[in-house]
Length: 216
Image (cartoon, rainbow, N blue to C red; front, side, top):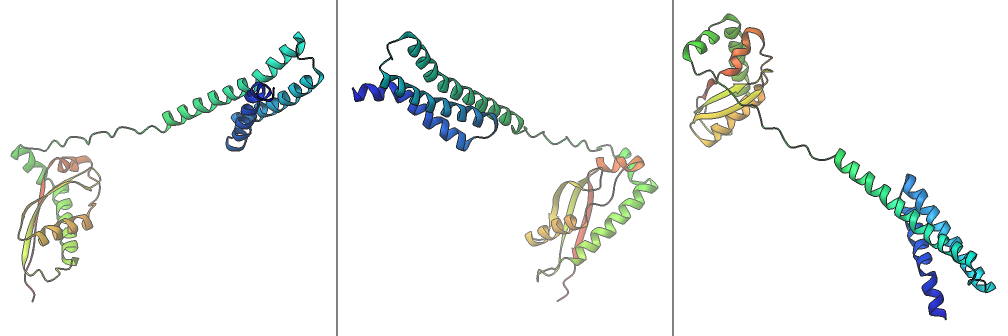
């Protein structure tokens, strides 16, 4: 008899535990649903115990009410699960990682006449003169760390803000000078916006030779 009583009240007991746990952990509407489910499960336990004590559980009215009371917690808990699942899906969709876009292709001027026309314009001459002066200052400021004399030849492409878009070491007397050249170029950039007649400079691979005599 005790086993039958426990089996009949087990759904309400589980709903009471699950609803209480959800009310403690969740927030917002799911918490309200879980709290209502726990309250209705507790009420169902009390009501079923009272009706069983009175011995009127065989009547149709109490049986229908008992089924409704034991079903309500499950319905409320199921509703809270749906709300939590839906909000979780929306959050995942909102913060889904965006596939990285490939970097834009670099189309360099390969026509010597066009490159020469770009470099011989007065704005380009002034810009490149300031660029090489700034690069030389950054180069002279880098310590040699006892490497002695050496040199490095850099090829680089600028973006429209004068930053380094692409760089390569064409020649270097040592790995240390390779690193010194890259570091000096990074220190000197950006060199200033390139617009109007200077846009063509962004389509050229510029070159710079940086050398240092042995001062020991």
